[in-house]
Amino acid sequence: MARGVIIVLDSVGCGGARDAVDYGDEGADTLGHIAEACAAGQGDREGLRSGPLALPNLDKLGLGLAMHASTGRKPPGFASRAPTGQWGYGVETSRGKDTPSGHWEIAGTPVDFAWGYFPVKTPAFPPELTRELIGKAKLNGILGDCHASGTEIIERFGEEHLRTLKPICYTSADSVMQIAAHEEAFGLERLYEVCRLARTLCDPLNIGRVIARPFLGDRRGQFARTPNRKDFSMPPLPGNLLARAAQAGREIVTIGKIGDIFAHRDTGLELKGRSNDEHVDHTLRALRETGEGGLIFANLVDFDTEYGHRRDVAGYAACLEAFDARLPQIRAGLRAADFCVITADHGNDPTWRGYDHTREHTPILALGDAAPGPIGERATFADIAETVAAKLALPKGPKGKSWV
Image 1 (cartoon, rainbow, N blue to C red):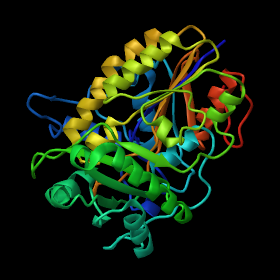
Image 2: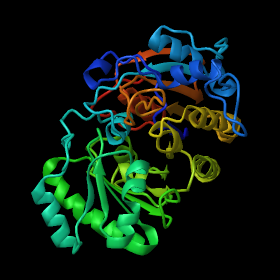
Image 3: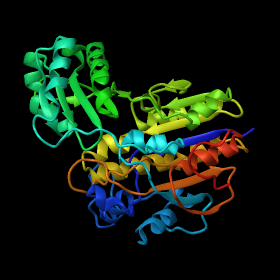
Image 4: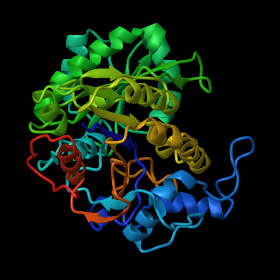
């Protein structure tokens, strides 16, 4: 029996979304703009990488063709000839351009309701939420209380946080409350507990996630976030692919932050590392150990957190090239009947203004037990779930259509 594998390259969008204008993102194109920047020498960094974007293994699957189909522009550096995989792109129908919306839709349940958001003003959080959080968590107060980049706000308030032990609270264009605190001085478990309290306070506001953002360092210029981030998400929608696999008694392995995104519901064996490389290692382990009929669902987050939000073109390009170099290992780990989909959940164009996600199409590449060729524009990311469900002989979900 086939095994299903979904690998989400977090934020690796391919432009072209027709509703991007509604999100202030018309013209954003994560992959296309990185390719163009690298071709122009703007993706060079001494000791890291140089030259045109080189993704030969992804290109062999049809990535360049998917990018061209999405935007109508031929990306530089892609040969796009005789692909060995199935290729196309997905159109997000969920109302948000955030991580839960993208992943839930990939799993077959688009978000057809409006998330709650915090206004772009200071203070950003409702006074009653702040009062309750301070009171229930027994805090001295909070710092930040605004829209901000995570790395920048830690630099701005890190020293004051160490003096006062007030957590740094901030938000973004996503439906999210993020809470940063020093992993040692404040305490990691203490930070998680504060976030659990914040989760309950955010529920009535329909906020998608509360995220714990631990960091280390003792002065400005030395602060650095640690890998012990933890997301506290709203429960996923019923009927998603993970729930169907669990109900059918299938073995499930989730890798990276998938467990957090789905609130640890039907997420089976959760494997979490500190980097894309470690998450690829976990994926290879799952390919070795997961039985027939199993589902493997992985997220590779470094593209987004380390390079997209930080608007780091060279770093993003190098991260893409590093994954591409490991793709042959993933392919070699597939058994004859396995079906593997590589996709993304949204965009995060490192050439774009600001530091938020960008509304884009996402590439869809399928390999393993898949006849090579185009799958065209998929009207919803949910087509991925329905195709994997068909391969695994699982019941159909509420949305989407299989392409096999």
